[in-house]
Amino acid sequence: MLQLTSRGNYGIVAVYYIARHSERGFISIDEIAENSEIPKPYLSKILQNLCRSGLLLSRRGSGGGFALARSPEHISLKDIIEVIEGKVYLVNCLLNPSQCERSTSCPISPIWLAIQNMVVEVIASITIDDIIHDEKKQEMLSVLETCRNLYHERVQSIKSH
Image (tube, rainbow, N blue to C red; front, side):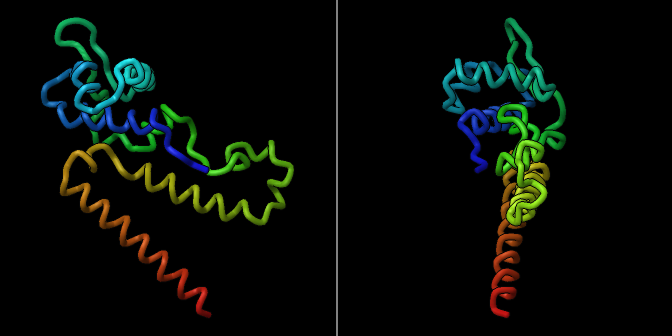
């Protein structure tokens, strides 16, 4: 089952913090670690991965630290999660169907695939920009709640027939 590890969550929190303070330029790892309550050695490895992937920039020395490599509108939760956690999937057979002997005949696989696609679409559509601005964040939460309610209404309608 898909579960975001602390590494994935810390990655999102760190990018969020950097984006929130981007007007100051490069943000030191000490500041990010302290204000985000992430252990510095753990954070260092996460930030290195995010730099290697092209999501962050790093600069050494005085005034150095980390900055976004692109605008927050172009960094999704999915981007960060996949750098740190790898490809998002619910069950192993969706990641590599050739390793599942029942992949072509499994009656459950289409359900898992539909759920996975929904999750991936949601995390791909939410950007760092959406969560650093309170108004946008509230709008995104409202959209998610509306989708959840619509889903429940439709399911109840189907089950009542």
